[in-house]
Image (cartoon, rainbow, N blue to C red; front, side, top):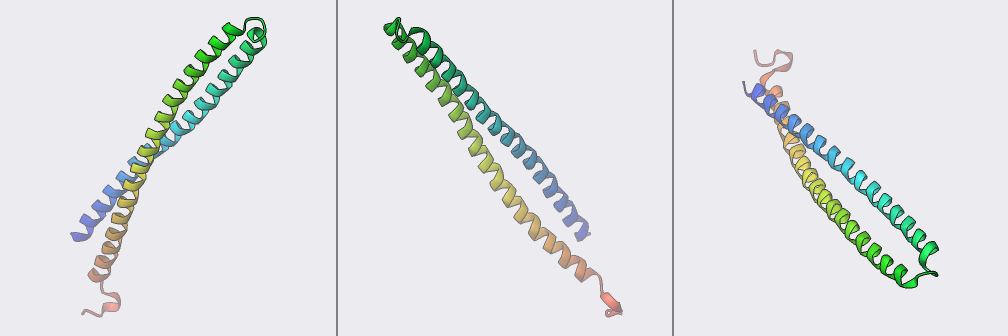
Amino acid sequence: MAISNIQETLLMYTKQKSMINEKLSNIMMNMMNASRDSAELQAKYNDKQQYYYYNYSETDPDYYDTVMEILEKEHEYELQNLNNWEEQLELDKNNYETRLNEITTYESSWTKLLQTNVKNDFTYGGAGK
């Protein structure tokens, strides 16, 4: 009876580990998306800078300076939003990894207990008769 309870506990830990691994996978995918979004954002910003530089920097310097200031502020705002998202993802990742390590430790101790119980429940070679 005790062995089956330990096995159920181990199955519960396996299920929890599976759920946490799924969440970690989703977080890692979102971290990859955030990196991609950051690179795309930078590329768009660079394209806009080049466009305004080549079309307005010498013909209308005041307009160019105003537009560049606005572009820079927008770019910094969007980057800050992405950085905040990445920081939150990193915190979530660390949290789930910690929980996964705790569960793995518990699972290991229950596995050892199961092995001990199985060993104690069975007598090898008929020594107990």
